[in-house]
Image (cartoon, rainbow, N blue to C red; front, side):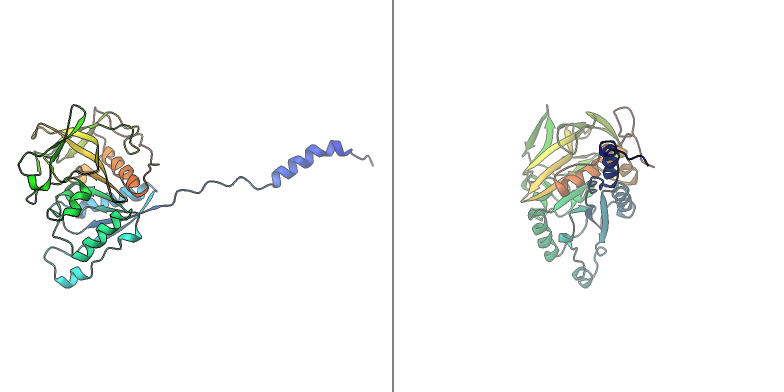
Amino acid sequence: MKLLRLSTLLPFVALATAALAPLPARAADPKPIRVLLLDGQNNHSWKTTSPILKQAFEASGRFTVDVSTSPEKNAAAEAWSQWNPAFTSYDVVVSNYNGQPWPDSVRTAFEKYVSGGGGFVCVHAANNSFPEWLEYNRIIGIGGWGGRNEKSGPYLFVKEGKVVRDPAPGGGGSHGPQHEFMVEMLNTTHPITAGMPARWLHAKDELYDSLRGPAENVEVLAYAFSDKSKKNEPMMMTLSYGKGRVFHTPMGHADYSMKCAGFQSVMLRGTEWAATGNVTIPLPKNFPGAEAVVSVP
């Protein structure tokens, strides 16, 4: 029998050893972000919009969502005493709530959660809530209605590429007829807006104008021109409150508004940023441009 030299066998030994060696470890997928969605009262149809928000979050694969529905308006005190959202069990809280004041214990827990580093997202009419709750208004920056006026803080708008705080007297909160409108970027380098077109058309919505409040620690990322106020009104904002991060958008009036592909991308990326300080969710291929609205089925 013919013997093979060791030098002849070495290449085969190396191949066999490589085949048996463990593969490089695959990077683990990002840990899902835990979202608590608040609803239960609103002058808008939260029963149709909350499911759209929940579906968009979950379809992205980046979030898990629990919904906490408050007692109905004028519910008995006992019902309110049993409503205690577990804020600290979540990475970010998203509010689709506009209604009667929360119990003191819930308000205190919420303030502590955000100031301690929790994320918060304020959607559309959630900025109408709690005009008398100073800390909530510091968290959202600006809001409307509920008797807000110059004592609530300045108006906030964009003029010639600069954010203007206007202390002029007058009520806070207004809008004209619903319509499609152009969203324009003010900050294109923020993680939420990076890669977005400079201008994109948003679906039919209420374009809030003349919002006002403490307007502290707020950065305006995008705006839209209001035919009613004749000013560039903030449409996307980030804020800091203590150690917490806040994302605030006045967009999102109805189900058809929230089905806008641009709005959904804004919500997903804004919520991820509020929870983590980073954005990994890519812009969808169907993100709208300036020519036409793009709606999600």
